[in-house]
Length: 111
Length: 114
Image 1 (cartoon, each protein chain N blue to C red):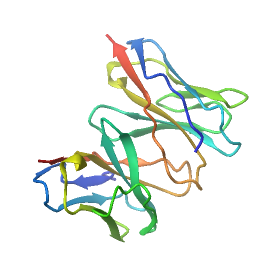
Image 2: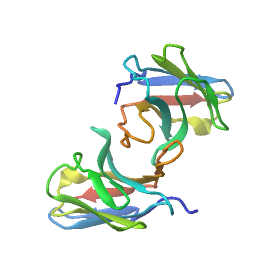
Image 3: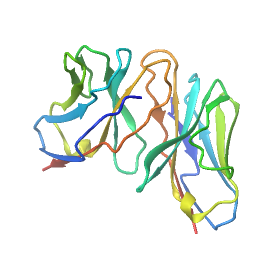
């Protein structure tokens, strides 16, 4: 898997948009960008994934740069329940079955 | 669906004892994964199965660890003999080969070896 780089921690005010960056400068053409999060004491939870187009679902939006070397996960209106560790992962969907979790970004939502 | 089910949720045992962790994947999923999480090492993949067959066990720390998947709805992770350094949270996850291939995680088993 290509390696990813994320800031170790970030703060965001409740109600504001949380923008979590991820660098993946060595990503291959067939590798997707996945985001998972882990709320304290729970198992990781899938959020979103994308290849090159921007994606949006009920949880978040994923913005991938045109050169695909970086991406941003956006939580549009952060709540206290979004406090978690967020993992950015790159992998080939459907073939490379393993997920290698890095250290992620610890997001603190401030009241 | 109830999601991935793991048992027990908490296990406290003494060094040298055998420990068996259990997992029931989501019905219809064809991949099953075992992870271990500690403060020091983060979330590590131990082994995963496809259609009940072990595909990659390179993450299994040593021979004391073994995993089986006798059928599509059940898997076990066994540690024999257990050691204090095995204390961790063990997660099981399952996924479908089609679609986005996202993994669905269970609630984990917190293992403490005294």
